[in-house]
Amino acid sequence: MEITPSSLPWQSLYKLMIGSIVPRAIGWVSTVNEAGEPNLAPFSFFTAAGANPPHVLFCPMIRSTDGQPKDTLHNVRATGEFVVNIVTEALGPAMNITSTELPADVNEFAAAGLTPAPSSVVRPPRVAESPIHFECRLTQIVDLGDQPGAASVVIGEVVHLHVDDALLIGGDKIDIAQLQPIGRLAGNSYSRVAPAMFDLIRPPSQIG
Image (cartoon, rainbow, N blue to C red; front, side):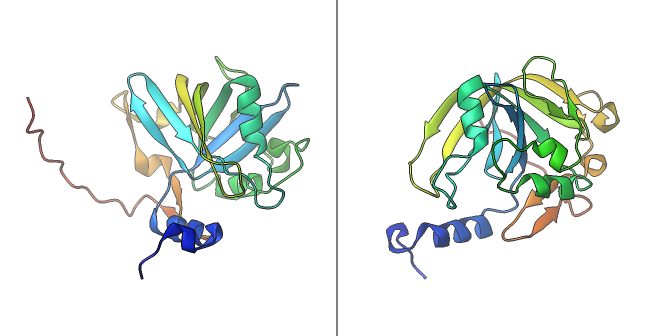
């Protein structure tokens, strides 16, 4: 099957993409609005974006239900700050609750039975139950469209990290088996990382 993107509705392209680009890390993003009210939502269009200085990015899409941007994007535009909380397998059900499209005045922390914890540098709270948090300040937003299904690329510099000591190996490595992160697939499906991991030794650089 050969496909020209313009020949398909965006919903079909979305299904093809999320079924092929797997597994995807989940950025569980907490923000606050102008009044300081919290919001929490997961994004599987999420990844790291360099380490010197450290950045992460996530991509909230315009909702198909009402054609409006997500509350997370509005909050980041308004405050310039967000926190990425890492989702473990144990936190999967709570994360799933926060994926619900809810009115802007609903507190997702309360809806999912989660504990907001103060951040060290930014205003949005962290998910206390998550073992790793990246506190971020906005670097740039790149809008890729203004119709339902279009996304904005939100890039933030990591200004503070929280890592549970129990997950650390040698001070700067994460014990993946202990973390038990999950990844997003398509539909209602998720993937476990441990114990299904395998190693490939990367060949040495041929430059320099």
